[in-house]
Image 1 (cartoon, helix red, strand yellow):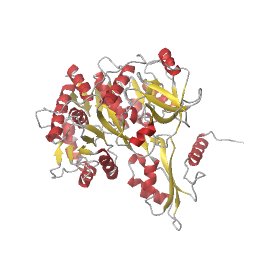
Image 2 (tube, rainbow, N blue to C red):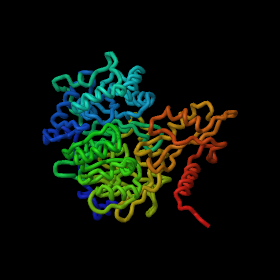
Image 3 (cartoon, rainbow, N blue to C red):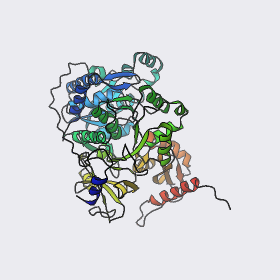
Image 4 (spheres, rainbow, N blue to C red):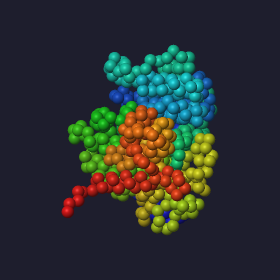
Length: 566
């Protein structure tokens, strides 16, 4: 046992043993076992319409049989291009029950992004909705030949009766007509079978999910998360917060396509036998109304979400008496947001930390008792962490010095999809390097102090500067480009671009901004494009971000400082 683990054994703040083990388990077994234990309990609440565990289990079995009938075999990839809707849950567990590997795609993706990741993963079929924001994009990907089939669901079909009628009458512009294409199957047709699937059950060590991420550097790569990775992480989270006796009532507004929600909302709720009140997108007013309507006990989110709730006028009139605890992840939680949210709601807001490569969560502050604001708490049970030397990751960081945070545990990904060179870079003797620089105090609490990677955290989403820069270089006037994250009160960070122009070009930053942002995903859009005569470079002539980062931090600090008077 090393010194750090000795600290956790004696000063562990979570209500379980630090060295707790988690037996091998698959996601379908985890879900179907929960449905057997709680058949009549409500599992999903979608804008007022409730689905029991038994009803969802039936849909899962029929979805598995439907995927098999469409030619999906064990190991095939099934993509989910969906917001938080009941079809996501049925398709997710159904595809896994059929032995397939799920690939999550953000509904914010452009055609190019969706096509690239579908091709990279070898996705055979994508499930989406007949929404104007989704179906046309999915159809264009189908037409490229990147995928073979589409399964298309309907929002109106899963709403409460009166809302369904209103949606069909009033939301026609938001609905795209279903094309008459033999490669397109309605979701209702997918379920139109006897629920018998002959596929052999998956094994705990099989890959369950390909989740795209930037890893510790570079363009998005597919993290391979096994059934055991995901079920273990859900059980780890449940172990440190068992919740209420009958399972928490969780507001599911974090998108399921994000690994944070996949673990802390979807899979963790299944472990606990609780209820998910689903919202297809974040809207502060709708979230507040849902908290009051279902008497929610938990609300996982990102800092920008909590800030938006605090800023909304309905907050003062919302009954938060049922709300017990909220976990914040995806980006650093400002101390003032934590303090104000707890004061306004009476609920505890704790900060956690994780990566896509960790199936969601590595560490959190304790749900009960005192945590340490500004830290990411202590590791989950079964999780080991260490600090590596920032210059030489084969060595431990010098005693008392910050180092690159590395972890190992049952939630550690299998590796990157078809990226052995990336695996070699991120794994160090079985430990996964996070790219974040941290300190560990005498009580075993971890504080992130810097990061080695260049990714920009925008309200819980990761933006890769190289992707935005590649788009900028397509502009005929742009000669050089650097994109960095600058401090933002609401999102944590926002991308900002700096460019130099080709000889003779006279384009303004505003003009380039207007051209650039429509070509990017919503979370990637830059706050400004600044045209400069030159950009900083290293001694060997490479463009350098660090000078611009320091400059923007100094500006932000100056703008937030009290006015100086003589």
